[in-house]
Image (cartoon, rainbow, N blue to C red; front, side):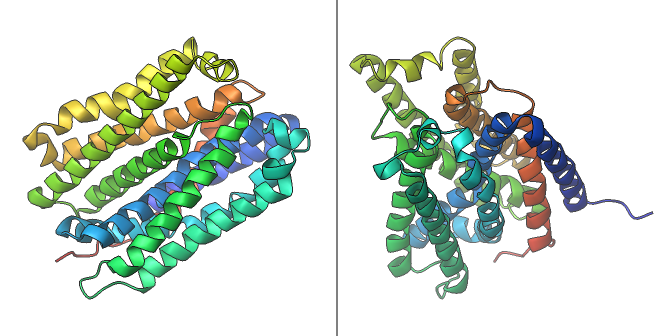
Length: 341
């Protein structure tokens, strides 16, 4: 009997979870729609974050990007599949977003929001295609192409964060919110790329692994700084229309915030300060896995308290449904390790 590999196991789990979600959609359409949205917001951040790293390497160069290049492009290659997974969200937005249920107007008119969503994912797909098709002489993306793509990517991800997450509470606004979500996606994308590269044996060089770990540490610090600024501004301004958003994330959700802060920043910060840890593939992989798990919890913390239905079993099942398909695709895109010189 042929032994099942990671790709087949991932696909099997994804299909089983997708069937469970499809059945749940019949009896619990609102719970299923919000679970699918939260799961999609987590998984879409990995290829988008990988694009940020690809473009940053095109701007600054360095051997660290060459070591991660195959993995980063494999993550970016999942964008077409994830774009298809956006379709249920476009049709089920009225079950999740209060402005869509009430028939939004202007910037939040449902057809306009759907059109912007299509433009966002199309722009990301175009950037991923350009990064793969137009490498420079040394294999990295040319700086002349990287910087305009970086501007477009940052602008579209910021607007996407406003449309898809912040608008869950239409009376609450934050100018730093787009940068905060974008930084979280970049951190998760880099963590996923490092984790996959280590699993493939493509990050065994201690010096390059040390550089990758320091980049991961820098992004974790930036994410923590932006999160702290967001909290301080909300706390000090004490505006009436912002307080409900903050109160919904207190109590049990406040304890959840402590959990993902510890595993997304505090633990990685303390561990990656040590040079031996940064040069250990096993230790860096554990840190990257910690960041990914914490980022998923952070996405739930950002979105679920504003949902009409409380957190339930559909949220983790939706994560497995999308994630299983992505694992299968990544494993099939590059089943063999590409040697890096």
